[in-house]
Length: 208
Image (cartoon, rainbow, N blue to C red; front, side, top):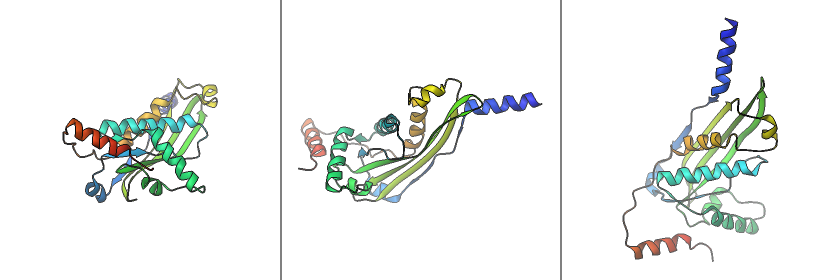
């Protein structure tokens, strides 16, 4: 009996545990029908920059898979730093949304990123919340997710060194589970090559 309990506990550790994805779409989303999105720099008290980078790049990939047109993060960062120069105390996601030439922005905040060791198994728990905010500052959608996974393949020394290859895939899964709850953008009508060029030009004309 004791052996069965230990075995069940080890299986639980290997599988990991995850909370259900919590999300909500607001009525304003169907009114505004966003098609273009900018993903803002990721917030949260996380020292490892690569962690935030994976959250952001995974979100961009997920949005593009849904059919959204996502602004180049390098261009978003240019606006972000210009905003900081104009307001050294910082800017809220709503304030940044008004500066970007997109229908909406996605803001990600990492609420938990913790590495520990359980009975010799390296484990990782992490959580984040996501918000889709319109250019006019209205909340269109939000989602959050928390998960903890443990596996034999983890090496505590590598985790301490901040090497993320061992669990980047787990971050990507968390992000994908949240992003897929966002409604897809409205279908884009076919345009002539001239119309496409004009639309593209308008999309990237932001700030003098």
